[in-house]
Amino acid sequence: MLSSTLLQSPIAWIGVGKMGLPLITHLLNAGVVVHIYDLSTERAELSRALGAIVHSNIQSLLLQSKYIFSSLPNDQVLMDVATSQYGVLPLAQPGSTFTDTSTVSVSASEQVAICAKHFGVNYVRVALSGNPTVAKAGQLTIMASGNQSSYELILPLLKLVGSNHFFLGNQEQARLMKLVINLMISVSAGMIAEALALGRKGGLDWQQMLEVMETSAVASPMVKYKTPILKDRDFTSTMSAIAQTKDIDLILDAAKIHGVPLHLTVTLRQMYQALIAQGGGEEDYIAIVKQVERSAGLDVESVLK
Image (tube, rainbow, N blue to C red):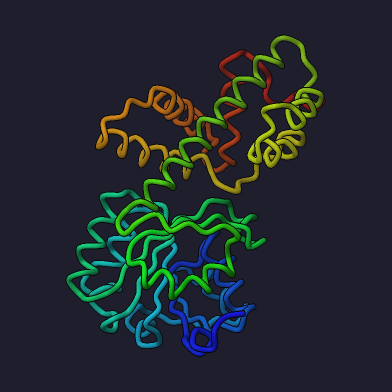
């Protein structure tokens, strides 16, 4: 249960997309009063139906709480929401805590940190490992960095949405850790795609390959999660190829800054670009399987026939 102090303190939340909506659902179910703002009328109405209080602008939202959260799609949106003239940091009440849960670059987050310090706002970076399905189950792994006292204050809220919690330092460690995890996810997707294409081209049965994989030495949580999807060849997105490519670009930017050669990741970026060019950008990122199959001269439509 949350402390009575946090239960009595409303939360301001900006961005209720694929990740934001399940996150506020857990808060609402715990009795937290959640005020939200989102540019999408559809997403705002979904939040209202869950019990959230909807606002038409950020200024109105920030009058309601000193605990502000955001879940946003990219660097530019974070910068606009956080640092613009009518954004969170210039308008937040003094001493507020701003917690951003977006997947963004270290450099963008550093700029937000500078702005937060200027306006006297405590800034917590929270990186989430898991997709919307995991978020709905409240089983996310949560990596945080920034102002530690503020992190400890909001930790009871974070425990409502995640099962594993790590505080990694007082700067951008959570941002970098998320990129490290996403690098492994991205390369693993490419590995699965190439392995399955080799098996298919050599005459192995699709279903048997997947059954062996999910019980073998390579049966990681990711492999086990993606195997049922691959058995049905259902590429409905939990995270799209376009979104995965955005994250790969963040990874490569970080690698350039730190002087780390990422040969596999560079190749994978090209593979995803080809998938997007073939019209697969909105499919799940594991649809990279189809791109490798095409490159191998395999029919991507006849697998289950």
